[in-house]
Length: 269
Length: 157
Image 1 (cartoon, rainbow over the protein chains, first blue to last red):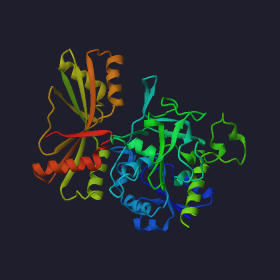
Image 2: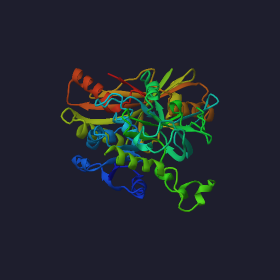
Image 3: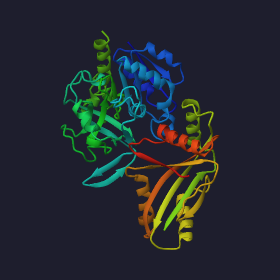
Image 4: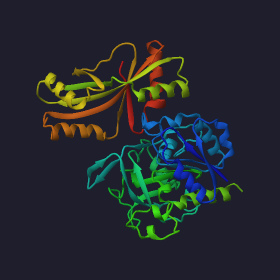
């Protein structure tokens, strides 16, 4: 079971993502964007990690989405292989038209991850880059999506975010309803009790309906703004979290990578 | 009155170079596209005052003369011949434009500032004549320069 961790110029989370892949028992390697795209067929799954591909020039993910490896990634996705896009990886998948993927094969861009706008009590209180620990509520059934395959509906995960453009917006009428109806909304930002409150600081970036992660209709592609690789080990948790000091305890982000592994084990049989 | 500040880098513009590279190497525009340049466009609406004097003051605040050049246009916006200007702006709320407006009004005391709008103008130099150049510019805007869910564009010819 071999995972390609994609690296574009400006990617900066590839090494910790690779550690997470290996820790759950998968093989993996860094796959540079300029390698022959034909080599991608030798992998069972793909992760596009976070960072600032091409320095976010034009807009986040726009330039990377035009690389030949993305064309090859679309072909691999059509075979049902799992793809996980984290933060900038999510932005690239959106710009490439792989997410939400409601117009298959066309590469049509159906939404945007726009600049963060934090709203509280009807007023804009902050804009732009923000990093913090957030709670995520799993809003899909287990087995619905490759990256949350082993996570039960309603489960809460505490995972950090760090981005300036994670505000999901769309001009397509009915798109959000369709995502909800088809259970493509995988995670939402919530408070520690699992309540979705569409205001800062619970909704950290102004995202429509507090959406933090979505999958494609087939469920093999997951894009999420939070960084599970930064919460893979309990020691990565913030100092006020008691789990930080429990040796050998897994961090909440580990479940994403374990899910991907389980998805490959089950779905490739 | 509308004070338009056209601002561009005097040093090489890496973002424009990346756009050119992507259009030539990834999107097959090598035969028709000669060059890409970029400008910031800041449009400041004021309700009183001497526009020339205000334009000089705004430029002092918003343009870094060490690396940028600028041109002021009052109540008009025009571009030179030789390229197709594609103006790209957010159609959702533009936080940066609001921040500039608030800075001019609240921090710097320009109470006559009514509104600020901000855009990027991509200057596409083609080896094509006008009707084809405009059609290709639209195609490029829709393929790379905008995400229609947050941006809109206008060909400024």
